[in-house]
Length: 358
Image (tube, rainbow, N blue to C red; front, side):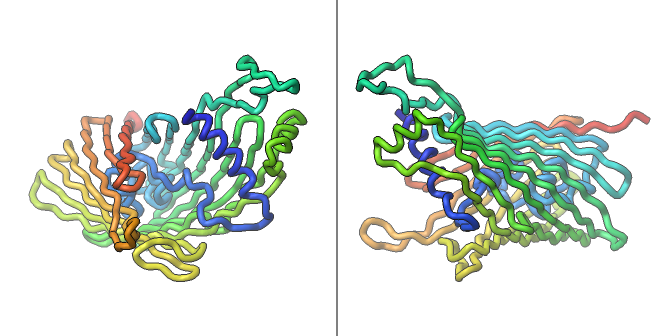
């Protein structure tokens, strides 16, 4: 039943994006979930701190600050009681002492969705042998480049982003976009800016309904989806990070991100039309660069309950990590939904650091 419901939602979503050059508030949202359990344990407040292979997603400027020659990262998590799977893999390498190159791949999908459009034949007979399954999945590939500038402490980078979304054989879309980022490190402080979809990302949808499926849509009074273009407007993240050295073994860092959107008023702490700002705050404590504890707060909103009372809600995150030689294993416990329904998810990620043989 859950997957059948997902099928209906997905098919209806195709019809939502029918108007050419319309800019919905929420487009390519699977690219906003985040990658790496380290960053997600810090409530996604990671744009300034990103200095490993996951920087290809968070802020490509940080790739040049990697402390190894090659890095690999893998992540898996599940959402909505295991219905949706989210996977991430990436690789990055140093080109020279000042520059680095990275590749990232993301998939967010729901598999084995029942296709019941042909459940009833032309004579009105129910035949379960006519039920097939399909997947609704979103894919993204990122090619990242980073370089340290001649100004001490300043690095910059960018992404070329390719997006592919498909709903079984019903419809699919291709999109292209660019991201730009910068980081400036001064003593224990790091300041950063990350512009996502800076030139606006366009997803060109193509509907592929066969005659039988179109007949089902017409018979049930549903609008037949057509080709369309979906637009993702730019987003600017401003970030500041501060590192604290307690002693030779204990370190602590805190980061604040300000996520600025330009698609109209949203339910955030700071909002206007067309700009809204959503702050996120993350913390990490480490012992001997071996054990890590993380927490953070994101998605702070003011809502009203059924009685009209104003409530302030937020999404807390927690995480732990262990690093041993060239292997880092991280875990994050995140809340992706309203606290009242507690849609928590468990995120696991692995990172491998390798150096060239001397």
